[in-house]
Length: 398
Image (cartoon, rainbow, N blue to C red; front, top):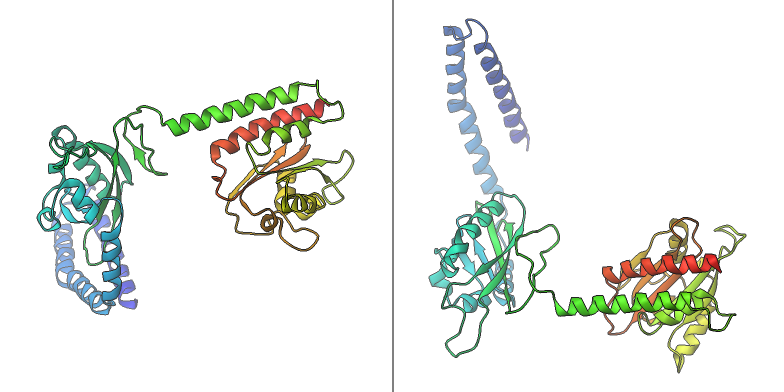
């Protein structure tokens, strides 16, 4: 370490002397014999001192480097080969270093034959240049990226008549495998079936795939959210029901079962502080039969001040979305000491403050999903924030 620091200091001094020589050359008479001799001396210094010192440091670093564990290398190779998605390791010229079993099946190539050959030979001609350019950019550490490529004509159908994908969504990222002196590029190939829409890129990855047909699942989810939003507005505006029922109670009935398995509503007292009974629990809707009813009573008896996540949402006025929450006491605990998240068996939660566009927080709505039901998504959380503003306006008007 001391030798490296000393070498770095000498190299810094050398660069400063070279910069001074360049500055002197711009002065009148700066190209005289004295400056020329000094420049030749510096070149000789690099050749006789700095370069041998650099070679010694590199040799010492290689000698002190810990040899790779062969068992770990075997494990990495087994993981690479066993990946269920096609993966190819390329150099900056798109030449194959290795590919896993799934990739050899996709491209119809044996691993021994593919190594040392460009993977672009398996792509349609019009997309080869773009692919090579993207691989080179990733190898230059310009960031990961994704693009769509067409397989070469003839690779689309298998010998047995089974239809294979003719279009791939390839994600490229830079890696430095052990023992490699240069940066490699890892290409993950995801087959795109016919009629599929645009495959989203990973976060931070530049996507070059043009927009296509929308995903039917995304369209269906969007329609369900729009229907829920419409029913929520109708429930808040319809005052033909029991006059004793508040807008918040009507909103909870719309959300229960359809959007969330558990719906917990807390409202803020008109005269109170966050430290002095600021919130009070008014609604708990959970499983209605069997032990679910007892659990709902236990949750209803809880003091909202004992739920850290609810208190934080009320004070900060910001929503919270958690999938498989790590802190079991995020929603506090029941009277018997059991965490509410364990009591409700929640797998994801959404905590939304009821705050009108202008004004203070009027309450907090906590939604839980349990069991095999899919977790709350960002689109659902965004739709719930819109509905929370509607609920807050109805509460303030009431």
